[in-house]
Length: 144
Image (cartoon, rainbow, N blue to C red):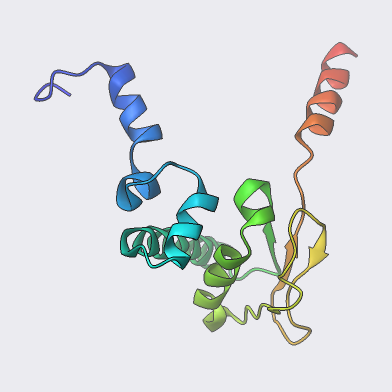
């Protein structure tokens, strides 16, 4: 920050909005567009997606070590609910832990569903986020 003479707010913007997948891909920070570009041969987009999937799989593996294994892997939120190929890529990197994704079952968006194979040691789910419900419940709790 000193060298570039930027403020804390400018640095926060760089870290939160101009780094990671967006910086690697050179595209907007929208996984749908990055995935489309990758599927159309954009090498930077492919690298961005691969590095993102690797990072997520690495975090899951680290937590699995800390917890002495996992029973469930749950995908939620925008990417987890909607990005079929990203879920698949993450799960494929976790096969050494007994994670087995069912490609046919995984072909779902924003629908609660089991997407693991019956033989998977770890059950994999897609569970849509209901942020409005959680906000309403928390508001109700605070009002009481």
